[in-house]
Image (tube, rainbow, N blue to C red; front, side, top):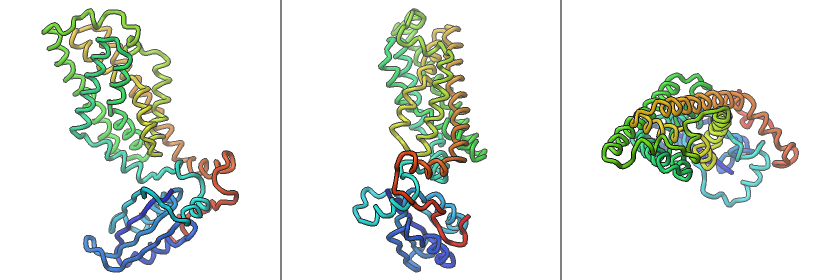
Length: 333
């Protein structure tokens, strides 16, 4: 698997950049076009890089100042049907599926922590579905609400911000998490209150035994364990760009269902429902943030070592694959 690297480089930095990209074991299709860039002015440098080593290369490029004075764009080709790909993948350490590009993780976390209209609408709709699931005692609707809910984006942003000591990202993500849930609960509480007044449901629908959805507002030790596991899985999926795994995290944690039950509890003023749902929400969010941050911290410290040595453990790659730093320039750490 290759990553296409497109760089806009100020002319004085072009030669050092080409030197960074000069290792033929991990870089191919290197192209330099002098003076073709207009905004910002400079040279265009493009190449295809083995995904396993893109992180250290980006670090070197940032050390040269390309990120501040030029431009860096990463894209993943749809297909790479040429022979050099196999050679690069055999030479690069680890497996491309395990690659974590930490600069991309931070960038993705910043994008996910933006308070967009779509985020709030999805969360409101998810809490609405969860409320209906409570009234109908439907486990299928609970799963549907979990899938729709986008709340892990803010949880992941908090974890990434804490690990990288990015205070603006932490506070932005926390604001999104708290305001998003409060806003969704308030909106659904108002809608549920109207439904109660017009006779769409009654208090008994909320307080009656619900064997399929009662777990939503009954937190226990398993709620803590699930939240911890979900936090670790979620940040791993975020770091390695496993979208399908992220959906699994949404399905596993009862954050949105608890918010839906909380809205119904407020609308019908059932104190035990409100307290139980609030406790479930607090356990889920706290557990995911704590476990996610701890896992991401350990992952950042140990991931290069682990991925390089999985070749021996799982038989990935070719024996004797190079394990050195991918760049050979003077700016390599």
